[in-house]
Image 1 (tube, rainbow, N blue to C red):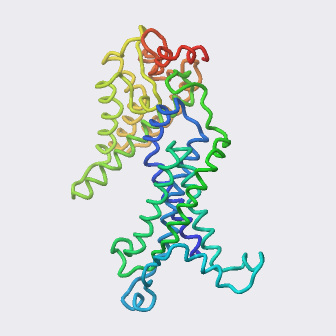
Image 2: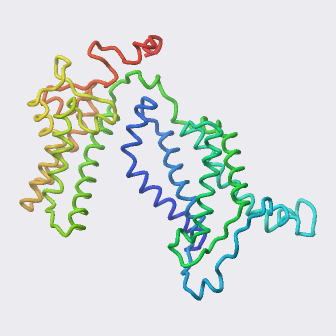
Image 3: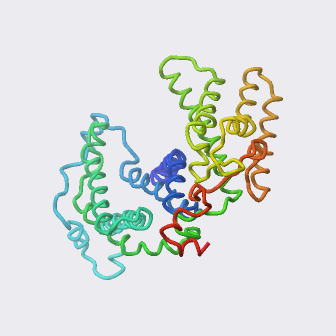
Length: 370
């Protein structure tokens, strides 16, 4: 793999991993900040995470093997402290004219340093919704941190610095951030970001929203189980796969609903809460029935398969998962298989017991738009 492709690959893989780890917090934030999920906004957020990784990978990779011999021959010299030195570097070329300027060796580096931080200004202004001064200051501090990392050889992890600290990089990176702030409104044209109503107004319960909540619950159980397994291995203890699945499943799918308003973590993320036929908080018995006939039953079958080393419970678990998903999509109320068997319905958490949107109390016009 060529040197210029490796930073891009590392940035994409690293960004994808971080985006996956922060997917649940992002979904909780976007439902509360924007009122609903938008694929366009989510895609821009993912690109922003990959971009942040790209800043570091292009600044630090490829990293050489900084042996004593390598450092004696290739270590960078003193920092470049003279502002606008790049102008003198461009002027050193004797030829004049547009063609000569385009072939100037110093110019591409300046253009790259400006362009590298343009997305920072755009995302900071559009996604993070920060003021122009805050975003430009953030770009300067980010650039300063990168330059200091290069100056110290990645804070002493390498024997010597292999990239030079250049004050002109601070200037051009900050300029790029300012340019990004100025053209940030262009990101509003990206599709999939529009919201149907203000954030505090309740939305209809859709099949996509139900499936997303269910997927979050299943993913959390698996991630917590994997974390428990890693922790047990690091401490020298043995944790059976059965406990690694059963423990987080009980916590996420049963204890959290019983201690809260009856909603699982996934339902809380997508602003849903279960109610009994009278619109009240579910009883303990109904919550237990919903858990057993829903995702809790799925993981119970998986644990049974692990305990008895049988494929039959796994097949039953797969079938249960498919049926639950289909039932969550098909009926109008989208209560799902567990909701039908437990007698529980679902409402948007922004709806009060009186059936009024919370935002409508302060903004009646918003309720009328529904």
